[in-house]
Each structure stands twice: as C-alpha cells, then as structure tokens.
Length: 513
Image (cartoon, rainbow, N blue to C red):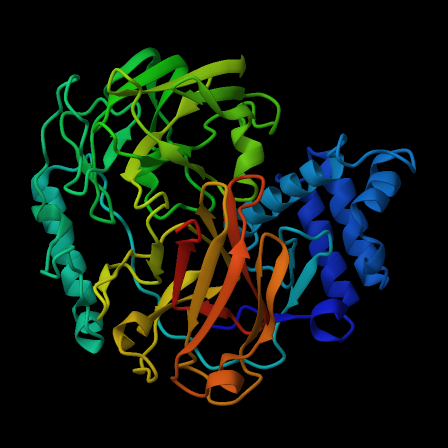
C-alpha cells in the first residue's frame, strides 16, 4: 500500500493541493488533539499557511517567535524556548491524531524534528505496487502463566513458519546455538550483598516498581530482575496505551515513584554503561487527567553523588516519542561496592521504569547493532545483531528476494519501511554510524527516494537505493563524528520523498576506543 506522495514545494518541486491541505488543517484544528490548545493551533496554522504561500524560508525560530507568540524582535531564543516547546507539542499531537483518528485522511501534515517546515503527504495519483506483508511482532506479557506463554509461542510459530522457511532465521545465543527466550532460566532474586547480575555477561537489569514473583525475559532475550535494592518511593503501574509503542512496552509498564534511591551491588573495578528508562504516566499530551505537558514533573538523578540529570522533564525529553531512555558512561561502584542512584524531587515526584547496567569494554560502550527484524542474528564475523529496537513509527516487512554484495545476506531479509525514526540513546561522545540498505522491491530508479538525517542534520539527501546499488544489492553508508542531541539520542530520521523510506540494519560504534 502506498501511503501518499509528498506534495510540498520543498520536497517534490510541485505545488501542493491547497484545498486538500487546508481541509486537513481544518480537520486537525477541530480534533480533540488540538482544539483545547491555542498555542498548538496557532503554530500549526502559521507554518502550514506560510508554506502554502511559498514563504517557508521565513520559518526560522526567531521569526516564528515574533510572528506567532508576540516576542520582541531582539528576544533571546536560547533563554526563551517557546517555539521549540510548541513544536514538540505539535509533533506529539500530530502523531496522536494520525494514530487514533486520522488513518483515513485525504492528506497528511507532518512536522519532522529539527525543522519548522511542515511536509504535506497527498494521495498518490495512481496506485503503487503492493508492499510486502508486515511481520507480526508482539512481545509476550510477563504476567502470563507458563502455559499461556507456551501456547502463544506455538501460535506465533505456526503464523511465522512460512516466513521462517522463506528466509533463514538465526535466533541465536552468544555461542551461535538456537535458543528461545522461553527456555532461559528465570533466575532467583539476588542477595542485597552480592553483585546484582541478571545475565551471564555481567549486566544488571531491574524493573522498577515490579513486585511480581518472577523475573522477566524481554523480547531481546535479556533477563530483568523484579524491583530490589531501593529505599523509599512507591511501586505503581502505568496502563499507557502508547501512541508510538516502544519495542518492548513491558519495560515501561511499572515504575517507582517518589523520593527514592537505589543501592545496587556491583562487581568491583568493573565500569558500566547505565541506561535509565522513563515514561510520563500523568502529564503526557492527550491524557485526559492532567495531560498538560512540560514543567509539571522535574527532578534530578545522581550516581554516587554525581549529577547525571538536572531539571529533567520526561515530557520534554520524549519529544514526539512516547518513552525515553538515557545513557551514561563510566559508571562504577562506590567504595562500599554499591552504585548509589538518587532520584531527587525538584517539582513533583521523580520516577523511573527500569535501570540497566552493561559492562563497558576498554572505556567505550559496546557497539549497538540493530537488525530490522524480530529476531537476533549472528553474522559471519561473530557479531550479534539485536532485534529491531529504539524505533519510532514504521513497520517491518519481509523482502522476498535474496541480496548480493554481502557475506551475510540474511541480515538484509527484513526492512523497516515508512516514515520513521530511530532514537538511539548514547552517552556524550562521538560515534560512527553505519546504515545498511538494499532495494528488493522496485526495479527502476526514482521509485523509492527518501532523506536520512541525524539530529536535524542531513546525512543523505534524496537517497535512491536502486540508482546507487541496483536491484537486491547491498548499499552501505558510514558517517563519523556524530554526537547525541540535548536529549542524549542519536535521532536518525528516515523521511519519504517518493514511496516509503527503508533501512535493513544500523550500527553505532563508540569512537572512544
């Protein structure tokens, strides 16, 4: 199915259908997602009308602040982020609208991170060839009984058997043997005085607020301990229906809330990468109870007395996603053999959904290798590629054709397609990003064209995989010196120009080696 062709002057070099776009703007402004927010209505109306009037070159932060929000001509945009905050709000409301109410819109209005120029997606003039069928990818709930889990897996196996025969699936453990997450040992609660290892590689993973009786194995095969090592706070459950579901929603279903701390025993002299998982349960946009956005919950996070996050606002950090993950390097135990994490209130109650610690290697975080497929893959060099992770939007599709130009053709058997992003959490530093592509659907140049950017900076303009690599042949693009944005992410955006954007795999390597 073809979602639509971009029809803005900036993207396609042609006039948009003014009536269609303005009708969609009116529909948005009247919707429940926008009608109660004058700020969002004002910004969306202004940027759409300016773009339709071919004045998109005027859509700069300062000019928008002056013309929409009445700021003085010399106001300091670094001190007054009204335009940036309003744009974040508009992106979230647009995302919610198109997930909940706007699936059958005649046109679509999108606002990508790093720009105030909207993109208009209009209906295609003629139907495009059908895309491959999407892959089912629903993680099991950790609250199911063993029998229900086994039954669900059997059903899933039956549903996927044709796909698994079609392209070889290597769901492997670190030693290359076939392994289902259901056969992994559940493990028992660790002693408060022993290192809190939840995995054979020395990783520590704790589900905050989870007071269940058994540990959880996530869709990536990682084992998570139930909540422990905490002092203070309270356990609670978030029943969020994510408008952009994270890869494993179960990691965000529970949380510890209040003024609290964790004292986690760690291996001596071992240095870790720390990841903290957050979701806003109350103040997120669209929530019928107190859903009024930023500046309601602000807190500080400290590790062994060192401030990791200050004035931290989950809503601001999420951007247009529904969850956020923050990463930190060089974390180790204090002199007493424990990592002391403190969550300190500044406005409202702090919270966290999960705490993850992974051993670093020679002062660098382990490489992040993501395979756009719902299973692990171990390549010919012995590198283990994770199932698809950190994505926002898009869908997985099987390719239907084997690729050439790689010793690992199975790495390219599934793609993420659509208008989507990857928000990969990394600590401050410099990183090398490698993107892997292959065109296995279209047979002519110009049938799939898209842009790729990182944190608002264009990496590839008007990428045409077929034009560069031919049919079913691997295309590899590498970029050096990338740094995380203010939210600690490499936000990699894939924006369609003609048909869906597509990617097969992503690799992020710390340049600290």
